[in-house]
Structures are given as C-alpha cells and as structure tokens.
Length: 351
Length: 285
Image 1 (cartoon, chains in turn cyan, blue):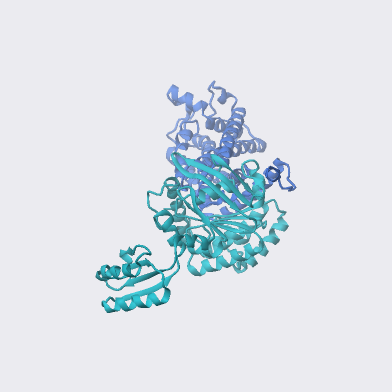
Image 2 (cartoon, each protein chain N blue to C red):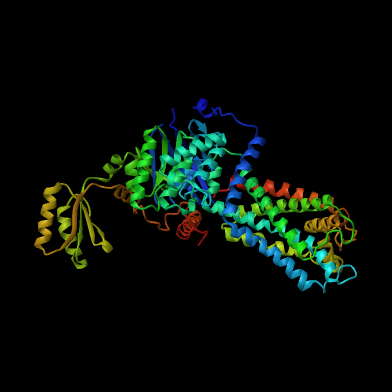
C-alpha cells in the first residue's frame, strides 16, 4: 500500500540543468515528511511535480491514491498548496481571497462564504478580514495563504518553505498552526531550508541535494549517523584560536578532527565524556590564559547532519550545487524582491 | 496499486462549458475588484486617449488632407474612429501586465493547483479588461462629442449603426487582449509585458487608415495599411458612424470592412486564445 504521497524516479530537466535526478518519496497517510535541502536542491521542483504544476520528464507519482500524471485534475481536488511566495491577491481583502478560492474549488458561493469566515476565525484574521491583503504583515499573509490552501480541508497538503522570511515569533505561530493541522490527520509534505523546522514538524526527513534524495529517516536516525556529542567553543581573541585548537584536539583524540569556523572564532570537536570532560576543557583553556565567550556541549543538529552528508552547510548557495538554481533562482529572487517591495511600500514594486 | 491509482474521486463535475463560464466569472470579478482598488490605473488609461484626441484634433487638424480637403472639421470627424480603435488595442498592455504580475506573484501557481477550468484564469482576465475597455470607450466618446465629433457628418447614420461600430471596437479590443495574454505568459516581469505589449502596437496602429488617409501613402505601404486587420475595424466604424474619409480602395477588407473586422477579430481570438491557454497549462512558473 503506497503512502498518501508516493513518487518514484522523478526526473525533470530544464535545458541542460537536471533539477530532479530521480527522486523517490513515500509519505504514509497522516504523517509529515520534511524535504530538506539548500536552495536549488530540487525541493520546489519536486513539489511542483507532485502538485500537477509541472510535468516530470520521467517517473511516476501518486497523491491521495490518484495518479498525478494520468488524472491531474482529480489530484487538484484533493490537495492544498501553500507556496513559497504567499500567493494571495494583495488588492483583495482576506475574505475575498478565501471566497474566491472556495468558489474555484467549485463550492457554492454561500458555502464558500461560510468557509471563509471559519478560516478567518481559525487563523486569527477576523479583524483584518475586510482589509486588502497588501496591508497585512508578512506573518498574516502567510496565514492567509495557508488558509487558502485549506479551504476544502484537503487530505494531502504541500507547503513550500512556509516560514521563509518570517521572524521567529511568526514562525513559532505558524508552526503551531501546522501542528494542529497535522494532528487532524492531514498528510503533509513540507519543504524547508531550516533544519530546526524539519526537526520540529516532520515525522521523517528526506535530505535533498542536487536533485536527489541523499538521506532519509527520522531526525534522530539522521543525527545518529553523524555521531555523538561535541564541544563547541567560541574564543574571545582571534589569535587564541590556534592554541585552543591544540587543546581541543587533545581532548577529542580518536573522535575526530577539530572544525574551525574562523570568522565566528568558533571551534568544534567531537567528544565522549560529557559534562566532566567539558569541565576539564574549561580548566585547561583557563590555565593557558584563553578567554572564552561561549562554550557548550551539544548534540548534533541537522546542520551537522547536512554538513556531513553533503560537505557544505545547508544555507550555502554555492554555485557548484547546480540543481535548478541556474534557472529557478533568478526567478525566485525576483519574486522575493517583488514581495519585499510590496510589503514595504504597499505598492507593486519589482527589482 | 493500480486499482488505487485509477480511482478518481467522485465529485459532482459540472459540464466543462458551464464550469468555464462559472470560473471565468469568478476570476473576472476578482480582476474587476482589483481594478476598482487601483483607480489610478483606470484614470491613466483614460488620460492617454483623451490626450490623443486633443493633440490630433488641434495639432494635426488643418494640415491633414482627407479626400480633397484639409478642413479641421473634417479631420476631427475622420480621426475619432482611429482614436477609438487605437484605444481599445492598448488594453493589450494591461492584460499582459496583469497576467505577468500574477505569474510573478505566484497567483498563477495557486490557480493552476485548483480544480478549475483551465482557460478560466485568462478568460476572466480578458473579460475584466473588456469591461474596462467599454468604460474607457464610453468616456472617450463623450470627450469626442465635446470637442466636436458629429457622427453622420457625411452619410446618415442611426443609433443602431453607431452601437454596431462600438461593438466592433469592443470585439477588436477583446481580440487584442488575447495577444496581451500570450505576451504576459511569455515574459518574466510585468514591466516587460507592458512595454512588450505596447511597442508593436505603434506600427500596427499607425500603418493603417486610422490617422491619415491611406490613399496618400506610398503604394506598398498603402497595401499594408489596407490589409492591416486594425484598419478594417477603423474603416467599418467610419462607415457605420457616417464619418468622412471612408476609403474607396479596392482591397477586400476595405470594401467589406464590417465583415472583415469581424473575421479578423474572431481569427485573432481563435489563434491567440489557443496559444495562450496552451502556454498557461504548461507554464512552469
């Protein structure tokens, strides 16, 4: 029995750039899959293929039990899509936006109206319901966009970077909304660049890079692959970094190399020995007269997972990591620019 | 698994045509609400043709030879059909920019992920533009009357014929918005759609019988002007309005201007609607 979202061997090429290079996914009903990867890894292209916006060159996909390639129009009745770019009409009010979407889902206008009221209430937008969406804050727009994706309570939801560009408070709020949604039994595929977000919301995670899934599992499984705990030190003086590195390499012997992040004056070393060892390291650094700004023992984060899997950190937008970045990134940047402009001035501006 | 994948959820599906009409109206309503909230765009859309009416009437009037006369009064009556027709074609840029903007903002993605009729987003847009064009024409006709346009100055006309002329103008405007739709879907930014929607309109509207008597043009240019789809509507309007300067050329579209105008417009709609809807279906963002 395939999951609510099931994809096999999705391939999509733009010109000579291979955006998807054989993506396989399976999301069991009622669970959340976090699709994690840097810009241009192929996350958005995957979502676009699964939501019928883009036809893959090769491969097959089944969403909510329906073949995406054979019956795209039927798939559209069973999915909700919340995009990376809050796709609401900014000159329409929140209420008008939701009513329009309801009517386009073929609801009767009365039913669409009632549903819009319900969603406005649920997403705390009732007070702003009759204001044009361009007057909304970034967080409100995202909520409206999400509400629009939920008009028919679809069994399968796709969210493409739902919290990109939001401040931490709004991100937290949106996470709560998403959690509620999922507790209601909705299957969700979520893409994100934020490792913390995947950690927080997803039952399982697929890490994508250069159009392929390079690792999958639960957050804990992925972390386990990266190894145990590590000590992280931020030294006060840049010139102390070499000495600090020496100290750490002694304590980390047999566990791995010391990683140095020069510009942050940060050193990291894998260790075993926990808090006791941490105390020893502090004493040793102190003896050598190295002033420290911060020191801590931490479990690997998904950042570390990503780094160890791909050799670069997730936020990197480096050129080598082609994917669809060549074609898509320019567009995405332009879109983001447009949104930022719109937010600031309330007018149509595009960079 | 195959049993699952072939199952299509049973949703009361309307017949495709009534769904297209319903969805198009929903989208048209959305675009009209939008337009009403950006009144400055409607106003700018009006200023330009009004300016043209005034400039052409007072600057060119008196130096343009229509038939055998350079009378400003004759040119004024000659000019209006041309300005009306040019105005409706400028709606192309609005449609193109609107659609490019929707693409840019991700709204087209939203629409494409909804179970709606495929042609509805574009049809809704073009219908809304048609409403705007009709309003513009109404205001423009009033301005034209104010500066001295008098239908029936050469041949008798009546209200029905005048209405028929405006009908042809709206049909032409509607046809041109489909060209705009295709441009809007093909470019990356709304700005490109605006300029891309306007540039080619200048040769199309000027190499025609709209502003000068095409009979006075160099022969090859005259042929282009007389077969220009745009000229057919201008000629048909002059004919229906009883305005001066009706071309006596033997070119088929000039002799059968009303029919030619309808055929050209319908043909443009058929071609550009097909191309646009196809492009919309496969638009990859």
